Image 1 (cartoon, one colour):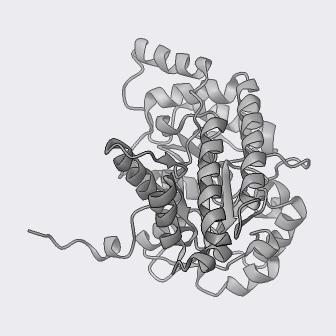
Image 2 (cartoon, rainbow, N blue to C red):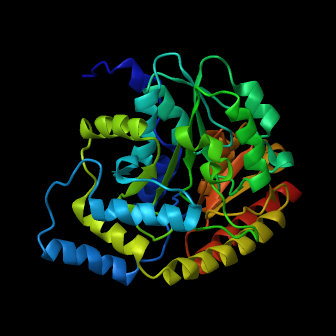
Length: 398
């Protein structure tokens, strides 16, 4: 027997990144030799001092509910982080702690969007952005920035995407899936457009701030365009930089009234983030940051290898990302040579014939691409890229 579900559920689709990861896991369980490059999850263990803080919280009995918005100790650590790294000044009522930055983003969409409101989401985009907007009864508007412009939208594109119905702009830098990061000048140009539209709220997803390799320092929008500070929600978390994906801890800083509205949404859905994870996050943000540097160095070495390997494969092109642990490859020429109808069929071919699981680019709003995560060992990457190279060299060349 099937049951009718709400129309809002019918408007959205399951996360393609989670679907690919689950498919690879099922095939492995069946005894198939599959290498999964779908999940965006560091292969490093959570650093010892952070684990120990979580254990101490458990042993100390810190296992009960906390304030919905997060404990003061963690809020103070977040405030210090924003001041130290981004030159952004917040007070406790401007901080919200959530069960992952994904929940933070969902809270934002639910708090600001009414039916028919539009949200501008530059493509390629993280797969969940449009569906979060749809769940909030909003309409995603997705201007596309292709490889020729480094996967970054221009001020002109942003201006053209804005209408009287635009309520929200979501900006992700460094970007999942492309690794592209906006420069200070590029952010300033986008900011000049947004200054002209005072009703628009901006959400900046800075999750990959610490996984970044450009010579110029990372910069966030509210830091670069302080005129937008009063209506920008700056979002971050500990999952990627500190290898804490399973701890589920995200946070943001923003306008007091908007943070209160987001906290109301959270209070009626999940309530507080895990008390244990909050204590661990305090240790992550306040503690020795050398662990972040070591992981970042490893990610850069992997990026260099993966991009070089992809560009040596017939029919494949890949730009080196400025950050994240993803490579976003244009496989349109390989698809054409193989007769693949779309990137989903191409990804299926890689999975079935090479035993390599990647995420089709269409899930990120960029057909003709695939995303590979290099948040795994170099040995794994060498084997995976070798399999892809052998398969495509044989079939594309033929």
